[in-house]
Image (cartoon, rainbow, N blue to C red; front, top):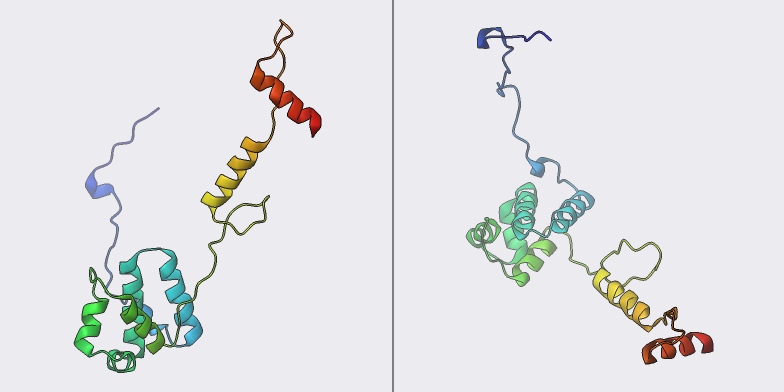
Length: 163
């Protein structure tokens, strides 16, 4: 194998000039209730409160911060404080903001990835049920070479036989 040596002058230069691009702003695309609802729902799936507040901030910007603040019953400064990162915003404030932008919070069962059970139980509960079923299921125990089984094994055998 021949080794190729190149100098920095011979290497191609990556052009990182971004002057022809514009900054992406989600608020430009949040122009109808369905889009807003989908955008906020996706931000909630991340289970990151800061991401939800950032998404609410974008929606407020799209609809007009003054209008959203007025509709939510808060002043503009309080709205900015609530939406900034790291703020511990109360549930009541979030609910009012959601209603002000035209969406509502809803509750639904957590989806499970269980294919065979078909139950709507949460994964931890489904595992407990499966574990309990396995513990309740009698086990066949093969007798040793002596032909005798201990008491627990006899009980298991008799349970299996009677079933």
